[in-house]
Length: 141
Length: 306
Ligand code: B12
Ligand SMILES: Nc1nc2c(ncn2[C@@H]2O[C@H](COP(=O)(O)OP(=O)(O)O)[C@@H](O)[C@H]2O)c(=O)[nH]1
Ligand SMILES: [Mg+2]
Image (cartoon, rainbow over all chains, first blue to last red; front, side, top):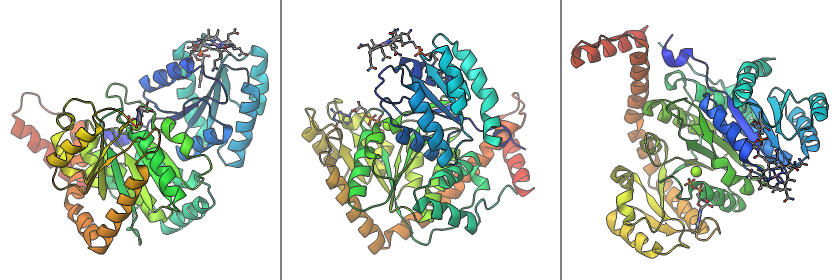
């Protein structure tokens, strides 16, 4: 009917860094790229537990959860988070993981319920494109 | 006419029942619905019991988020039920936002499952900001799940005035060592503050800044000094908020204050409606300003009555 009501609301994304991993450069680069494409990005900061990440996803009513892990502990955290999301009725969130993820772990992550994995050197345009085209579908499915 | 009641009482009952068990998803979803609806489409029933809506504003970097985290700790450990809305600006270029307030509050959320924290981007026009923030605060109030709602806003740009429209009490956070601190705070904001907080009192000049503030604004209840990173002085702010709330309730001030805002509430919704209409119609750039205003108002009125 009118301009404001016609366009879709911005996607809400939670970017989280789990555990004892201080590498926050990638998370911040990704957060800014998503903001610049019109998304609303909640950054949780470093050293988060699965429980605090879940709390952010739930309370922020996020469409997307992006986990950034460069410590090598991605498998455990992603597995725990998938279980918590399920228990709390939020499997509808689009769950993506980035950072130093060995290619052979990508399939394991997807087996847990992660939708996509992005390693070092991924152009930010690629992440933006993936998230904008898949987020709403995940939520409606 | 673009109006509807978004929430039926059974929906409210569900989200309240879930919220009581610490399952925040339904309440969070309801907040999104309000946030994504233009303010004229939202109609939230009046809450049977009010909760204290406290605005926390001040310049970026003054320590508002850290202080809000400490206030969560102080209120919750004193038996209060707390919700927080943390507003950060949207980028005018992309419309996106990075919402970073939660980072500073995380520490105080662990082990306090009754706290609900929501980050909001300021989005659109001033009227729309105030409209959706007020409606979200009302929804939180209506849920009956909270005794106090803290709203953090950046004391710059459009949201600074909006907070006054929404809050029962406005706390203005500033810091020492900004030269003449009083000058750095927008005069309008000084006038609407109910209390001042000089945060970072671990830095030199705090006492002097507090003195300046006391002189500059006669009507404020109090000037507090805090060190948010250590938690110093935070319980005093909390106790001041209890006293303030008793005053608002006992003297019938709350009712008066909220009723007084009814006109400006309606004006804000009207403003958002008119801005929305103006964005949707083509104006002749060679017309006189009066003619263009006339065209906008006529079209806004036509659409409203449709
Ligand atoms: C810079 C760096 C540091 C800096 C970090 C600065 C900071 N604040 O971030 C410093 C010097 C502090 C550092 C310290 C350490 N580091 Co270091 N570090 C690196 C290095 C060289 C580059 C990381 C980086 O910033 N890249 C640039 C960003 C933009 O890329 P990115 O994070 O990969 O992000 C991209 C993608 O992965 C993806 N992405 C990332 N996150 C997300 C999230 C989402 C949602 C999405 C969609 C995509 C996405 O998109 C981004 C854009 O393409 C890497 C080597 C490497 N090749 O990655 C080692 C590396 C990560 N570090 C390593 C190690 C071991 C350490 C230390 C333990 C060293 C030590 N012994 O002290 C410490 C630990 C610090 C800590 N507290 O965690 C190892 C980790 C090994 C592992 N995984 O098991 C690496 C891989 C080096 C190596 N080959 O051994 N490090
Ligand atoms: N020295 C000192 N630093 C503080 C204090 N309170 C907050 N900070 C720091 O000030 C910075 C900004 O704080 P933040 O809460 O994000 O400010 P906001 O932008 O007003 O929300 C952070 O690095 C805090 O750790 C304080 O009382 N003393
Ligand atoms: Mg802040």
